Image (cartoon, rainbow, N blue to C red; front, side, top):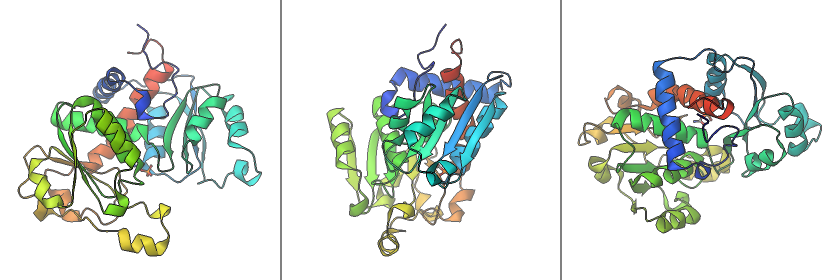
Amino acid sequence: MTNPLHNKHIISIADLSRDELELIVATAKQLKQQPRPDLLTNKVVASCFFEASTRTRLSFETAVQRLGGTVIGFDSGGNTSLAQKGETLADSVKVISSYTDAFFMRHPKEGAARLASEFSSVPVINGGDGANQHPTQTLLDLFSIYETQGTLEGLNVAFVGDLKYGRTVHSLAQALSLFGCKFYFVSPAALAMPDYLCEELNQAGVNFEVVDDLEAVIPKLDVLYMTRVQKERFDPTEYQHMKANYILTARMLSNAKDNLKVLHPLPRVDEITTDVDATPHAYYFEQAENGVYARQALLALVLSEEFA
Ligand code: CP
């Protein structure tokens, strides 16, 4: 049986249907339970990070290698020979994609992955483009939610922190909007969810509330998705003013439902105190590990026609 993701570019979570998201989550579960070390034999995948990364790059490269494939690429935060020599992204992509079977990239500019997909001869997977989208983070978030809640359907989910620049919350809200979830948006006013996304959610009939008091909303929640203020997108004075508006402590979780899981795309700065780590609600380190399985699932489906 062919699968609908074979040879597909993965640029925005909005490009994926509910069925495709469920297929990726089911495949991640399967690969976590039953490793497939030969699935990408003879496949070469480019890992091109024009912006810094730890989790996305390393879990992606681990995913390729554990499936039997080979990784080439760079992680120089834009200080590549390509950038130094003034080569355009389009030319870089044309060349690198001619060496590989898939092209995984992160770039500081919104729209860079979409642009790359127009010049690539192989599928492009977006590992984060500016403040826009981070679809593979959303896949591991969905897998972690499914793993801990047993469903993606009808959950109460709070998004907390930098909802303006946090690309992970943009992608996750779009994905969970397909599953009848209720959203609570908790952020300083200057870091609110962008209007275009709220409009999109409204048009999709999604039930969401903007709330100020994080503690008051915690007892209602199944998932509490914390994020850091995106320091790299502010000047230093502005950042000092914005950071640490919402800090989650273990005490604030005393009235949480048993099934509540706290997720965070990481890195954490100071928005979750370390005493939360010892509570049964903390799931962010398992979530980071799930990045390997979710990215394995995506690679398997994009690169292997018969895999489904
Ligand atoms: N969650 C995430 O994208 O982390 P990195 O920036 O380390 O890849």
